[in-house]
Image (cartoon, rainbow, N blue to C red; front, side):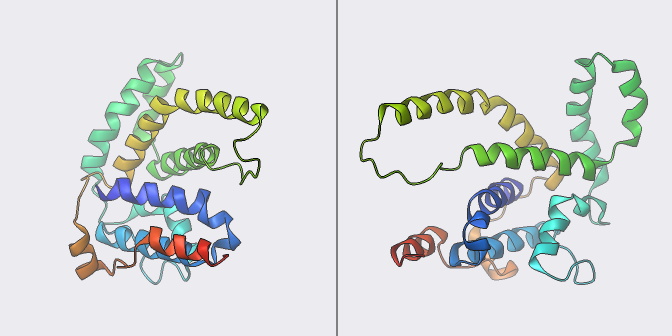
Length: 204
């Protein structure tokens, strides 16, 4: 599913590669190309008159501006999002008030807020740094164990947030094989992991 790939790669880019060398490195450049190709495949990549740089088209995505595009399928989106909205309202202590507000929902704001939270969660899964103690101290193992418990408890929350983000990115949930992406949407042929391994092996 393209929406799933976009979200996964965007989180990796922002939470890991974008923090490394200011994103000016071969792996981050490959990820940028992959993300932009996938956005084009589902028609959420901005037009030239809407942005003027990589940072701008990422902002176009980050702030959910793509939800306002004419190509966006509002009917499908509304029907799918209604399931999550009704569930939320039914569990709220302010159900009556929220029911009156649900016809004026701004999907771009929902996307932006949830994505921002999802990125903060993603940061928790990033390595804490390279350790040189070999097997490691008891204290470090104790920390890793406690951190693992916390992260495991987030699994269901992450799945629910991701499911909502997938729908907001592409309500129709399109899929496309890599050969088609390469042929029609300029998907890079270089393997990200190989590029990253070479970059690390050469000392950044």
